[in-house]
Every structure is written in structure tokens, then in C-alpha cells.
Length: 88
Image (tube, rainbow, N blue to C red; front, side):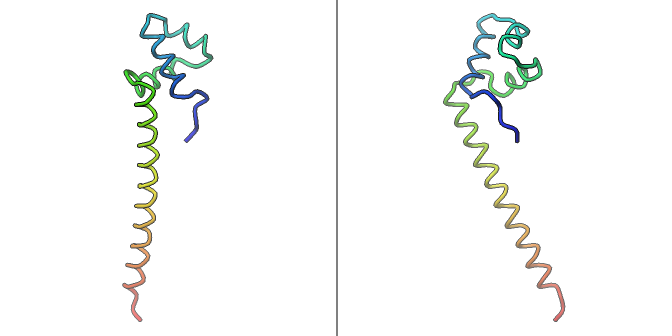
């Protein structure tokens, strides 16, 4: 997954500027980003604090690791199943 150029703290700061009354187009021009990026951030980080955003990222990383482990285990089980089905 592509990493963002901004940290969670910066993203939440931009969203807080918007909540304070700044227009989306002005914020996007000021920070050099597209409106699509802004709305994607708003969907993901709206109403969060920095600590909550860091916790969310840590949980997402852990979830990805567990999914990889599960996929490896399933591949091993499929290989063992295939090996046991062969006739000697």
C-alpha cells in the first residue's frame, strides 16, 4: 500500500481546519492535495484524535500480519492434503 506524505497528526490538523470553517478547495490548494484525497481522509479520520489514528494504524498492521499468517497456514494445509491424497 502506498504511504501518504503526511502523518496522521497533519491529516487530523487539516480536517480540524475544515471543521473550524475553512473551505475544502482552499485547504486543498494550501496543502497541495486533491479534493478526492481530502474526502478520503475525512471518511477515514473524521472525528478522531491523533492517538486514535495511531491505534487504528497499529490494528490495521496487526490485521494484515494475521491475514498473511493465515494464508501461509492454508497453503501448507492444502499442500499436505494434496500429498496425502496421492496413492503410494
